[in-house]
Length: 314
Ligand SMILES: Cc1cc2nc3c(=O)[nH]c(=O)nc-3n(C[C@H](O)[C@H](O)[C@H](O)COP(=O)(O)OP(=O)(O)OC[C@H]3O[C@@H](n4cnc5c(N)ncnc54)[C@H](O)[C@@H]3O)c2cc1C
Image (cartoon, rainbow, N blue to C red; front, side):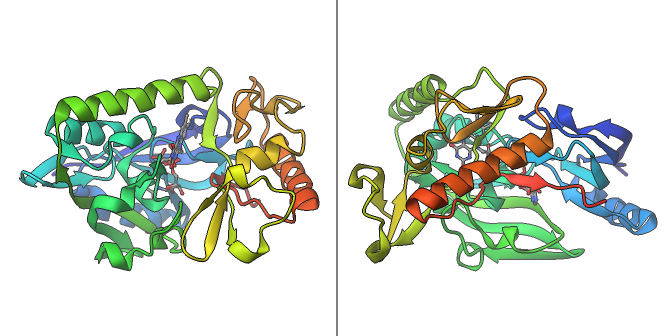
């Protein structure tokens, strides 16, 4: 029988791409799905809450730490069910899954190569880039909700821009998902993926710790678009709604490059907050609130964080 791995008193800053965070009492590694019941028994015994951590590229922990158990799925399988249908475990790196698709002449996720994080994290936040989203080729998701094993089909997952039903349920552990992709040409797909990765490397401040886009691009009804927002930074989301560039809003309240202690709005890309070395969680929150206030005052638009902020409640 395979046994889950338990570490104690771990430093959370080592497990997120923003590189801050205090300690967590326990970190559990689950390598095989059969270990999940050991984990549930452990949670019951310790009477603590838990947080599922993928690669930590969309999560910022409080410097005061997390009063609970961190669980990481390091399950690692990519199984072809037929030439177009793949079952992938949640712990697999998204880029590894996408490269497997490309190598096998399958198209649908080539524009998402370079998004760091796991397949599980991507499903929860419906990760996407350049018009492609994880929901696009997803058939179903297998997950635990409060110890009950469930399977949801795509239409049950309530996916939309950076959202899914999993964001609104507590105690969800995504185990795996099935995807079905379209045939494509490996050479063309790899070329396109490389072009996108090169663009990401040029545009994003990857030399400093960050969590990608800090805020979601706001989506508003077409008829309430404020007059002081340039049409050039607005695109149709659907028949009734528009999506506005949050980076443009932040730039246009003069905050691109702004620094608050060791946290700053990147001067390369205004939607990225960066850690200049000794960032504190309180600085992140204060800077987030300053950005939200300024954008709201000027444009009457409320920015919502895309990133998961783990406040220590004690
Ligand atoms: C440089 C950079 C560029 C980025 N570019 C993009 C981009 O282009 N598009 C985009 O969408 N995102 C982007 N991101 C953000 C991030 O990579 C994605 O949101 C990614 O999907 C997060 O995956 P993760 O495994 O790191 O999640 P984590 O940060 O570990 O977790 C995020 C949330 O998902 C939950 N979660 C993770 N795994 C599971 C699971 N198995 N079961 C249940 N819940 C789970 C966590 O509890 C948490 O609430 C970028 C980040 C960085 C640092």
